Image 1: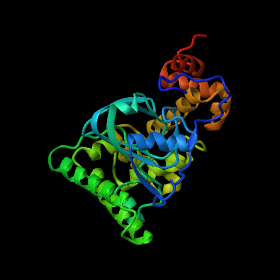
Image 2: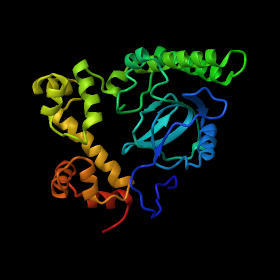
Image 3: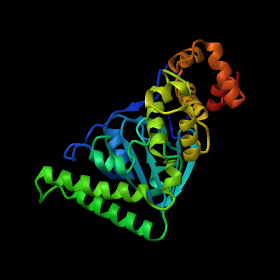
Length: 302
């Protein structure tokens, strides 16, 4: 796939999943790169940096100068200086503009790199960050200082024992993600909510291909359907059933756009009993058939 989104005709059964592979000499579990470094990293692993990908790690993008266009799960974003975008593991992400035309710092880190306490406080396991964040005032200054310290320490491979260096990088990254999560506007962008909602969100992320019923989640989590519905509506403005269906629809779109799986196989993978039920669900939620969505997304006609 090139940076304009054109694809070859090779059969694709899933979105390209990118495992984390540490660079030689880098602290295991985290990397801090500029955009030329990101391109070099992709080439060293035989990857097209402009291709749609589904990383198994976090990709935190902070734009310093210029404009960077990218898409995240079908939402197009134009990032400018001061903008931050947090790509979570499992999301489909693609760079849509020339990386040489902007300056940015990209922080890659694995889900287990931070301590459990930090991961919980920073809501690192939040499945979706819905929009870029543009911190202002003291928040912007604190984030920039934290990022500069992290970048400087990451490049200082000498002077400290490796285990101590890794710990310093871990602590500085912890400061950065905690600052970012709690910056003004981040609560709304992250779609955070009560403990009941966060537990429900994690359960949906884990089990949405197995069940689409709110009752099943309520029973498994020990809540009433009403409690989950209220918690979900307070957090993201929609009911629990719509939240589940939105997650199923997102995955359906991912598979229809980025793979060559027949619509029936997509429906089966998502837990629908047959192709007719899946097609009816998809059309009710989008106003078009799975085949029509795929053709439109790829710019083809049927």
